[in-house]
Length: 282
Length: 294
Image (cartoon, rainbow over all chains, first blue to last red):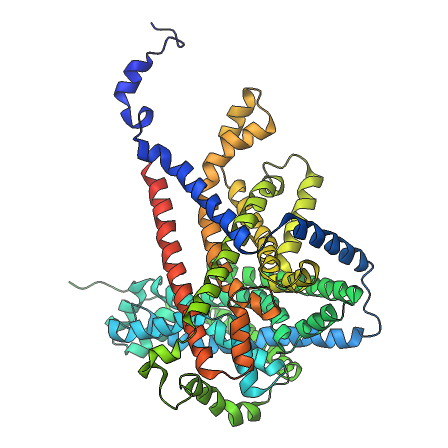
């Protein structure tokens, strides 16, 4: 019987060459990657005009700004802010709903199990990708050119940029659906439309509803910022107050946004649970 | 071969049918109620957001013709007939795109590093003290909820115009988002290695280093890459508020109606985002593939 501390490492080495004698390339890969990552970081810091003195000056400025923010105080414009917050929530709700309504039929076109022809699927997917590649703020700027300043441009901006995201997510949900139910409908003599309506939609609707709710939640955040370019909502007020250095109002507005986002998170979390819970039961 | 379908006696069937109809009826009623509430919320929202369908229909042609205009050169030709004229500023735009990528890279790296330092305090199973966990979690939540561009607006005033404000804004926002995701990975990690290391008398720091970190690095890297992808998009609009990157050029082009420039810059942004998406997707696949092999 051998005692445990007299392990013959030579034999172990011979038996597990992969563990003990890894090739130099494998051992050097990790440090090389880290060195490369930090080399790019240093280059970036230099190229982007980072300097310790600027950083420290900025920090003290930031500290001063934070002090000026206390206590948060809306002054006399609380009603305006509440209205702007309502506008923001409206933009998020309407924009997401519009996007979902338009994205559902298009996502069917982008799903492999509905449209087998790659010729049709490919351009639809590329268009969706391009729409997603452009940020909501850019869409807001474009829509402002079309329908003018105001929350309506924000609704359309959110609708368009979410249309791209929903098209992709929905089509993935549809592709993940069980094909057997569709075949069952076809076997009983259903038309392709019947297949989609009774075979696919019952499976994917709860998934889609969950995603839409999640997007309403995240769009509340996006809707707060599109005001910065003039597309309505609380972002407009926020950007204005930051520009005129009314820090107490700024901190109040930020608090309002935080509370609103938390409330929407809570509500949509409950709703999502209700929808997914119902599916688990049924 | 025939299979017998069992048919229940009439009475039993009637009871079952009635129960079924009632259940369906209740479900329909609930759905209808939900729809009514939803429609009411939409109506309210439509009033709140000053939706004006007439404006939309009147000006919808503008939306289409806007794309027509941005795809037309000054001399009335389509942009792709004279690519050299269309992409006349490609040197400047490529430099700005490079700056955008650098902003998102540096921002993501700083954010990921901060998130890495903070997430062990925020995770349920590794946090040394409840009060510390609470504080760190609230901090991360704050950093995550305030949109990056709001941070950028404030930082532009504190640190001056330029990419530095954009980098810091992206870094803070990424810290919040990644901190949460990282701490969720840590919460899913196997705690047995931690116990093993703690039983040898190791400190908290060694427990994290030798028991938790080896389990979670692949997940961290994957999320950080995903965040980089998101940050590239975000960095492309940081210029709107003067925080560096290609957004500056774009906003000028849109506001001053340099139509063909708008499409050229949009094209470069979309192509860059595509390339980054594909590259990070490939990298993520390789990282996870490598994990699966060992």
